[in-house]
Image 1 (cartoon, rainbow, N blue to C red):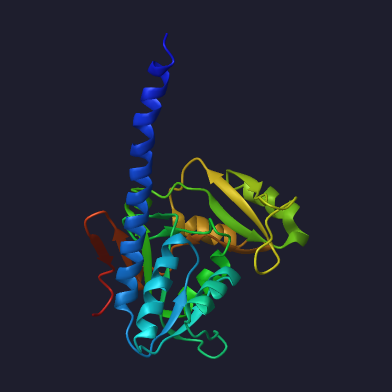
Image 2 (cartoon, rainbow, N blue to C red; image 1 turned 135 degrees about the vertical axis):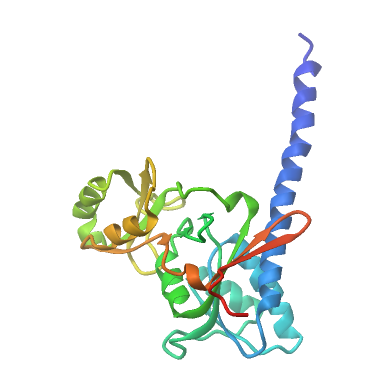
Length: 253
């Protein structure tokens, strides 16, 4: 078989993969920019963690340079660094225990606007900021929208209690695995000094019940299930041609 017959298919596949990656970036940027344009002058804004939220920061920084006044509350050290570099003024929940809006990404979103978050291991602070916000805006690309939540559920755990917590997580019929770091030996350490346990369930039939059951385990700090904010949630789904906005009917506009 001539060598060229092996090379030609590869040459045809690579541009297709590149286009998919470009489309995904465009979708994320569209969602992030749309959310940034929904922010009003004078607002205190919770700044989530993740690739889609960084496009929000990019656009929000442009609006700040144009004279808009906002203050951001970052949900991670990484977001704080990016926001400072972009010139967005930062504040804290100590100074603003109730904030106007939180904007964040998600790993999965179901039709009831329940979420799984925590791929970036920032879900504890993200949930604190979302809980303090009057409105919660979730920015995602189309592939994050699912009929049923079924992704791994990240659980932040006190290192002191890691073994008993994992034993009790198994009783909830999941496979818990301590998340390993990429550029260091050993487990991922969160911004709060804790471990992350990724829990794979065969099915998540009742997300609210599961969230409560995980929270009841001594040593668990927080899980990546976000079921308690649906009444104040707006989801912006970025697409190639347009953004789709899905809002809770409980939100008064």
